[in-house]
Image 1: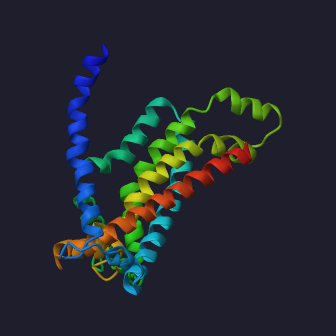
Image 2 (image 1 turned 60 degrees about the horizontal axis):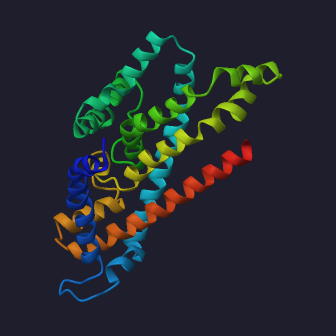
Image 3 (image 1 turned 90 degrees about the vertical axis):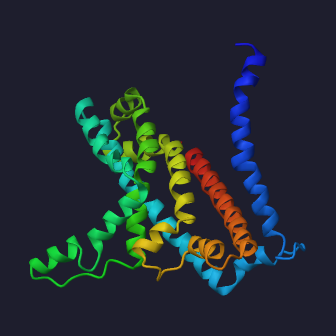
Length: 273
């Protein structure tokens, strides 16, 4: 295929990127650095340091970090089990794990709400067994549970791909040299899987940091994440300037955090290997 045809085929992609990525970002940036009268200001960006916004940012960061760590801890054992499974068994397990992704995002969260609500399946089961019901809904734990439930496949798939790509000869060589299973896991499998972990962190941590739907449904609106505040500024207060400023501040924070995650991953990989 010659260069002119390649350029022609890239035109729809370029139009899409310009229309649905670059222009919206420019619009948000312009709103973030201006007030309602159009005058330049940094107040919208600096609003992230207000006590309410700062508290919401810390809560968002904490829940996103916990959710990401839990996804990593759950993804690795599953990936290792699937690596040693027969191809048919592997396909069945993987199908079961990604099956919820075929449903609408909101439906998955509503299903989780029915499961952990005060009169939900879990508490009804506990009551039937003569045990006291648990306060599960409208808590930070409920939000974390919802995030892990929704984003675990996005961690599992890249981690699984990295684990499956490790040559069996490398593991066998380590065993022949006297390495036990723990040593193989910590010195071979985990270091060689850090690329997949990094991809998984990006796909889990970033949406978790900006989440507001899960917090609204499973948190009952009682736990304010920064995503909730931004959503309210755009839809309730109609303060697009402040909402844009908080969005840009959150975007910068996510980029910095993702960069630090990536650099630490590279340093860990170099140090271990």
